[in-house]
Image (tube, rainbow, N blue to C red):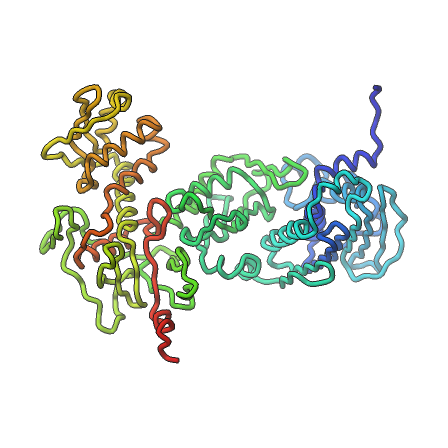
Length: 593
C-alpha cells in the first residue's frame, strides 16, 4: 500500500483519541482555556454526564471575530510562539489542539465577545466543517457549547461509562480546578439542576467547600520554601487517614498533576506514622520556575517532569515529614468545637491540633535511667523510674502539661489522665513503643547504641542457615547493641542486647532479629530497612499490656510522649492517645440542659 497524507479531519480525530478520552477530558480543556483568559466566573452546564452536552460560559477576555476560526484550528494558539516559550510555559493550555480535536468529534458552537467589541460573534463546526462567523448576543466573555460527543466516532462512544460515572468524572474535574483557582467562581449544573456552586473566596475557604469540614478540621497547614521552590497547602493528620486515595490533590504551578515522584515523597513522609492499610490525604500547591518543570510530556498535561527530580523529592519529603514529627504541643487542647462529638468518635479524629509554630515542650522526666534524687521503683525489676507524682491543681486549670497528670490505669492497657481541658486516654503500649522507637533511631543515627551485658548469656537453638548468615556480620550486629556468638552450627549465645531494650525477653528479641535477617539479609536490614528493624525491636521493648504501673510511672510516660516526635501514633500508625473535653463529658451526662 502506498504512503499517503491523511485528511485533516482524520488527523484531528486521531489526535482527539489522546486529548479527549471522555467528557471530563473535554471539559478540562475548555475550563483551562477559560482560566487562561482571566475568567472570574464560570458557568458549566452538563446533560447526560456530558455525553449529550457540555456548555461552558465565562467572563474572560473573549476572542476577536477574526480569530474565532483560528481558535478551532489545529496547532493555533496565543500562548506560545517559540521553543523558548514552550520551555517555560506558564499557562494551563499551550498545545493549540484541544478545541480542534473536540470539534472533530462533536457538534460545537463557539460564541465570544471582547471587552471593547460592540457585540459577540459566533461560529459553528460539525464533523470538521466550519461555518462563517455570525453576530450573536452575549456579554463579554466566551461560551462554548459541545453537543453529541463522539457522534461520528461510534466505536469510541461505546467505551463511555454510565451517565452517573461520566458525570462524577466531570464533577471531579471541576473540583480540582476550583481548588487551584479560589478567586474564580464556579457553578456546575447537571440536567438542569445546580449541583455545585462555589463563590470566589480564600484558598482555605475553597478547600473547606470542596474537600469538606472533616478534612479541614483534621489537617496541618504546610508552608515551606527552598529558594524558588515552595510548597503550601494542607496534609491530613495521620490519625484521620483513611483507605481511600480520592483526596490526594497536588498542583504544580496551578496545574493538577499525577506524578509518581510526588506521590512517593509524600508516602515516605507518612511511612513512620501511618498504618499500612491507610493512605494520606492532602491538597498541596507546589510552585517553581516554569523552566524547572517540563509540562509537554503528554497531551493530557497531567504528567510532568522536573529538571531536578531528586531535589523536589527531598524537599517535599522533609517539608511534610517535619510537620508530622512535631511533639505533642505545650498548648491548650482543642475545645469540643474543635473535636468531634463522642457520639461520632472514631480513632484518629480526636487527635489534637498541632501548632504551626514551634512550641516549648515540657522537659521529659527520666524514663530509663535512675534520676538524681528521690526515685520510685515499680513492682517488678522492669518498672519505669520517675519522681513522685505531680498533682493537678484542684481547679483543673493552671499549668498542667498538654497530656496532664495520670489518674489511674484501666484494664492494664490504658492510662487515664486529667489535663486542663478534660480527660486524656493513652494506650500505654502504643505510646511507649513510639518513645522507644524514636530513641533507638536517634541512637542508631549517632552510632551510639549502648548495650546491656547479660549477667548470664542466653543460649538458643537456631536454623543452621540463620547461623551461617549472621556469622560474617557479628561486628555489624554489635554496633546496634547485639553481641552474639555462634556456639555451634545450630546454636547462638546472646551476650548483650541494646540497653534501651534491656527489659525485653532476650530470646524473643534475638529471634525477631534473626527472622528479619533471614528475610532481608544483614546489609539490607541495616540500610534500607533500618526503620522496620528498629520498629520491631521497639515493639518487643515496649511495656506490655496488663502490667501494673504506678502513678509516677504513668506520669513519666506522659512526659516522654510530650517530648517525643510523632508521639500521636505508634510505629504501626495506630493512635496512641485521645482527648475528651469537659464539654463533651457534660454533653454525655446532659449537664446544663
